[in-house]
Amino acid sequence: MSKIVLIVVSLFFTTTLFSSTMFTLTGIQKVYPVVEISGNKVPKTAKSLVRELLLEMTEELGIKTNGYDQRSLAVVINERIVGKQILINVRLLLGEQVYRVGQKEKVFAITYDSVAPFLYQKEDDVLEKVEDSMDTLLSKFSEQYEDENKKVQNLSLGKKGFAEALGYETNYEEAMKRAKKEHKDVMLVLVANFCPWCRKFEERVLLKKEVNALIQKKYIPLILNKEADAFPKALDMSFTPIVHFISYKTQKSYKSVVGYNNRDEFIYLLKK
Image (cartoon, rainbow, N blue to C red; front, side, top):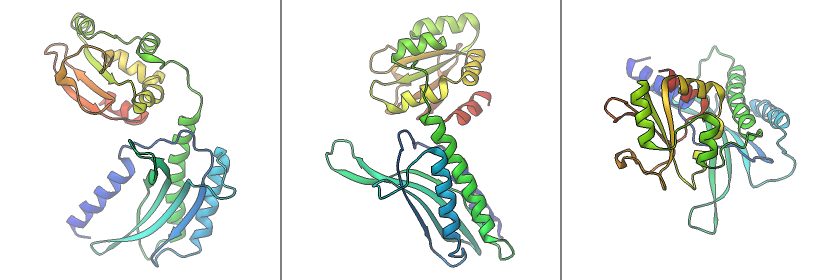
């Protein structure tokens, strides 16, 4: 394999397996299972195996699959040529009818997308490779589904309740004074009133004990509503949530994270 092809394949594996996800699985109670295989490298017998694994997972999670439903949970397997190599993509997709913002009619959209690719080798057991990819995809889906659908503490009802529960500051000037006194940088979380990803970030990430312990150890945590609270406008962006890490010496942001990051990603960021 040439160096260029090796780089392309490596980047594909890295970006597809470890990229951030903006998908949420809250409230998924019923799906219509679909399995599609194209190309000639994966035997058609894999279809029954994949469907069986898919149904096992949905049964364990309590997701109904009987009868038809407008929401489809699909496994799509196809081939892609990269240089002289053949890449087999095993993809898990969730498609459903959703409302587009500002419109009354529904559109069909992909609301979950995860892929576990592998390189085709003649000497490999392709069915075994497919099964390994399915194990990766289904484990990832199950973990996120269980995490997002379990009951959470009712601590994120407004900025004040969240701040009191976790010991966050709610005033920019006061936080900067405390940071200077304690020689700690400030971790500013900017949220908005109608931002579901902000609520998710609070409940699924910031409320976790191990996450809060890391934050409290290294930073002065501060949470502000960008629509109501005072803060330097240079820190504002068009998306929420936004997390800024601000130097207590210069009072300037040296690192910003825009959008939702899951627990593992945010822990990695904090430790790094």
